[in-house]
Image (cartoon, rainbow, N blue to C red):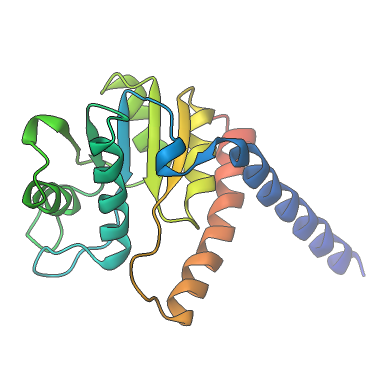
Length: 196
């Protein structure tokens, strides 16, 4: 009985943390046309193919970032992800190649090759790249957590959901959404409990 009560308490706390992340981020999520001016557009990395091509979820993010840049929302795009290694490992190089092929000049792109965790990306945007106002671009399921973490480190951040430009299978979407539920709870713990 005590174990069941403890489990129920943990579940309730996790649910509350999850909802708090969603609620905190909701006022700061924008469409491309409604995004405010910022110092930088921050693209969060994702998986790439063995030949260095971005997977579709990352393509969606990059196309949205380019759209924001072409609309003059910010002068530079921070490409944050895993850097270095071979062609199939270097997410940042893959993002740079993709945008360069679409006409984005090298001077408009900033590489952040240590972007393995969202909160670390946000801290480096603030401390290393001098970003105060950010437009954080990622897939819809990821935006609330990214915005929550960005604002928790003091960035004036707005999230821009990258529209799904491909047909994703049900299993893919369920897997990403389920993973994100746990990640939101962990993000809240990092901020509210660990004080990051």
